[in-house]
Length: 315
Image (cartoon, rainbow, N blue to C red; front, side, top):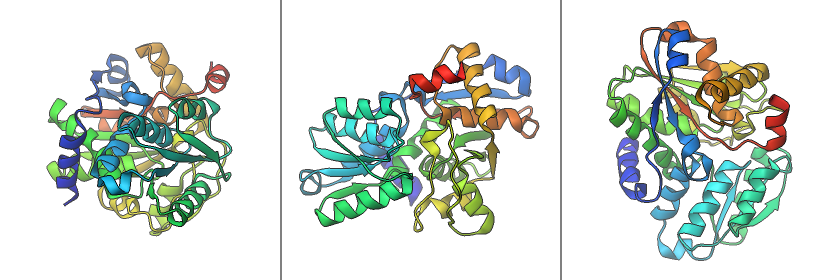
């Protein structure tokens, strides 16, 4: 059923999002012994894959549900994507962000004319508050990951990957709440069960990986991470948990130094700016390259939105 939702999402949003390039990486291929490609969602509108889910959710709503206003919660990219989609569709909304949200991302949301409210010091805390606000005001809440239409929108990346590289054998994708990997894996695994799907997380915020390990959703201690797009705990009823447990082959954790090295590598070798969350997937491949030697591999470069101060510290 989810595969069909992803196909419908692909048809629904194709006029609103970019079909991003799949770029061959000579350097990563040479050092890993694999045939490595980068799925360039860093060149997507708003600099992140999140617009796929945002557009799919908004376009799936009936006009009566859209018009009173939309509520979303995000550490940055989901909020920016929702704000962009709202502007394109001439809708209004409010975006809740945690106090630690990157100022550059918050400023970008505000420039799109959407109301921004800071609340909470953890992404999950912010999400729960925004959800309560939406319920109390009879507004639609758009989760960053805990929604089938959001997941289906992100799954359109899987549709494009299989169109661009039908014989792909492994896919690396970063994991926060799990919407990205759930969508991609749900489509690709049903199309070809032999495709390996690897979830990639920072050691400083490994909620989904730790939850999968113990067989239930748990909260874990959160430490500062350059991968702010994947940071935070996940909702207790997150539908992504079962999808990740069912379809992901393994999860890899990477250190902050691994993230820094991967980000600098892509900047140097591909002359591309990527954010910390995207560098997590690159680092995971570099740390676990022997299992994909000789295979065709895709790394989902999930975004490019990194703050100037963070970039300065890295360089």
